[in-house]
Length: 471
Image (cartoon, rainbow, N blue to C red; front, side):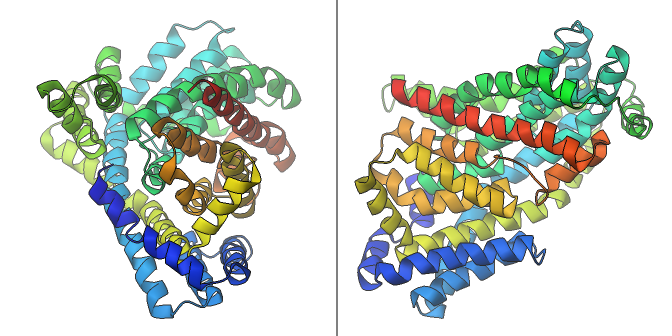
């Protein structure tokens, strides 16, 4: 991200240090704990929307810390606005591309191609690949709904437990959601920690591959025995979605769809490689720096998607415009939560709480990556939200990233992302989505979905720590 964006996100780190001198630790620590507790209680106990919970949590932090409420409001609105400006556009563009991918039939083409070339033994691995590929540009919930008819069909055709083929696909979706931009959580952490997006993207994919393999196809061998459930009758309803996609006269080819999906990834990776290997002020470096900027890369991806996915499906401009327009309303809640999380983060920064935690970590000898994971895990368990966990943990740990090398900052983002998906349970909407779609009991969901999320989180941390030994 640019220096200007970072100055918007962290306008007064020096002021934060000054605030820390003026406000004793005896008030800062209770302020942070009570602020997080307010968020947790409001979301879990009173079922308040996370947007309101984060807003009220920010006010609690300022009030307990003894900061003037007008100053607290200024910090919150500053963080809210800068996060919405820096991350909101990326989320909107990602949603547009994901919707176009679904409506054009491109997602179906990827799924059908990979599944059609797989044997029963390799089906779990193919499903993991499908989940990861679909999860790259799409939000978890969208990818889940899109994949359900396919999961049902594969389970019926192979006559295996729906868990055996469903868990690998969900592992791919969840890993991409927690570790790889342009998903909201990683984007917020990248902004908050001033990480290099291209490096984070590359390392995120590197970490995600073995993480998906362990928590997906390998774990599914055991989960399929623990929870041996055939595809439920919901399959018939889910087939309606497939039938709807088949009403189009044609859909884009597999190669065309793959090209469109990988376009933003290649552009952002190109920028990261150019920053490392290309000399400054050269034409190649200048061009790659521009087209690899996240907003430009995703904007190009949407335009490429219109030209390839839309045209490949026989959609005219009106149909494509309708698809793009329909992509935005569902993400309104996500944008508000992410922006409010930015406000909460800025409140932590401006009161000096983040710097206080950073000073303690520097002298404690605890691995920063391990601490980041633990903080994200605790917030995830309490709130049930991966995004809230990522936003809060990155806000608390932001001061630590200031003097760290770029690769280590990216690993810090990934450690937080891994922690944010730990043990999905009854306070997580994803838990109930999986339970109802798969037709499982609460106990069966805990033994399959929740266990997979926990394994994914722990494996992600282990891989991050191993990569940290190398880089």
